[in-house]
Structure formats: structure tokens, C-alpha cells
Length: 146
Image 1 (cartoon, rainbow, N blue to C red):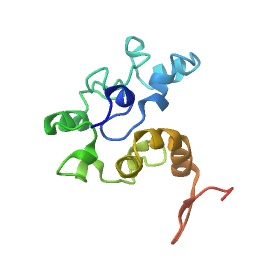
Image 2: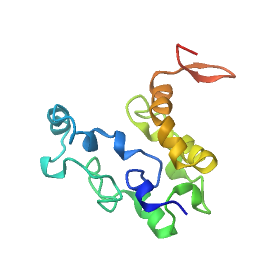
Image 3: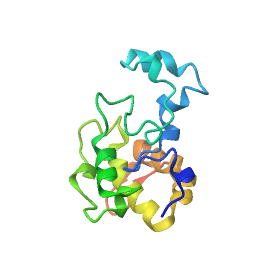
Image 4: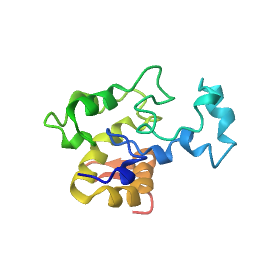
């Protein structure tokens, strides 16, 4: 079982709330204008992370189905569920260039195998590889410096 404090800013599906603009606005007020322009309510900001708001992510119009599912299955992380991997984590091309959804499955596997702290330590590189990596068949997404 994972430590609750370690999990505080990690969603059950593998999104790192600590790197979300809705959370980071507390330290970077310049993000507020962009968040409000994208329809977020100022009273929801800064977001303390999905676990602190019981799955009521300010990016969503209703309570997060992934959060509810993890809660119903009694798991802290999706990879702990007997149904893992399920369609809630299935990668999709839709908005993959701007949403970290497709990182969820990789993140779950990384956390399961290498641990939560190792994932947190590597998260910015994982995110960079996802958004900036160039696909090479047989090698996966590589960064220019590799």
C-alpha cells in the first residue's frame, strides 16, 4: 500500500496533479488568465489535487469517473485493480497533443514496477518525451539529445 502523503498530488489514474496548471497557479499567478480563459472558475483555483477535492477536478464538469472507479474498486492506483488495464486508460489519438491522457498507462506501469518516488523523479522527463519525443520505429519516442 502506498503512503497517503506520497499520493496526495497523484491521481489514481496516473496524472501528476503537482504539474497541472490549476495546481501550479498558486506559485505562478500568471497562469490565472489562461485558466480563466479556458472556462475555469476562480473559486476552484488553486486546485489542491484530485484526492483533496474527492475527484472533483476543476477541469471537469462533473466528478471524475476514473476517481470514482478507483474508489469503488478500493484501490489507490489503477494498476492495483483486478480490471487493470481497462478502457478508461486506453490510449486515444483525440487531443493527444495537448492532454496527458495517453501517459496514464505508461505512468501506471512505471509506478507499479519502479515505485511512486522514482516516477515523480522522472515525471518531467516522461512528460517531455511524450510531448516532444520523435517516434522512431523500434525505439519509441526519442528526444533530440538522445
